[in-house]
Length: 234
Ligand SMILES: [Zn+2]
Image 1 (spheres, protein in one colour):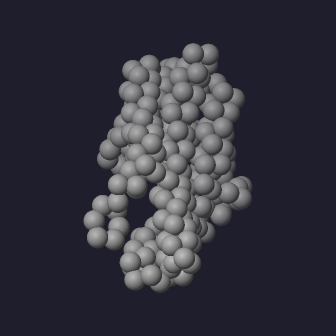
Image 2 (cartoon, helix red, strand yellow; image 1 turned 135 degrees about the vertical axis):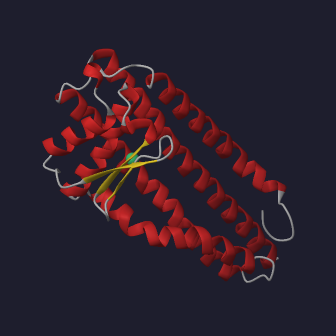
């Protein structure tokens, strides 16, 4: 991973988290595929439900765009645009409605000024900087025994970890809002509701896995630096 080749110790930290990431990705894809086969009531498609949900929440001004891919759906708070993937845009399925409602949940968070979303948005530049530059600052400082420099690298990388942590409440809240909107609006009932819930729970797991992966790397850096510090003191 760093220095003059690959560090096998890194495996000890990274492997469980990596396995968790793979599992979460498999889980969300398989759950989505399963509920993409379950038709939505009255054959309503993702985009139709998105338009209705936005209007019901006083967000008629928000644009809707179609983007390629599967599960690439997102809400852009800067552009005030809801981007729906090919897999949900025109699809009349329980899975599509769940995902679309989740993105509408983010739009509502933006409208009401939901705290964690604001913190998350403010963290984006620092997190990008930290995940890229932090690792390099650590790598440069370590072999030349400038451990203070490496600690700065760790601090920068921790910003990226903090970002993945703040992402969790934002995602869970968007899913809660989504399920509430789908239930109250009568878009889904009974087993359909359960299906949408399963899709969103699986999606949330990918964010937990991302946090675990970031934390594993952070802990590895700290472990290495503490080891190096105690060696230098001797
Ligand atoms: Zn989300």
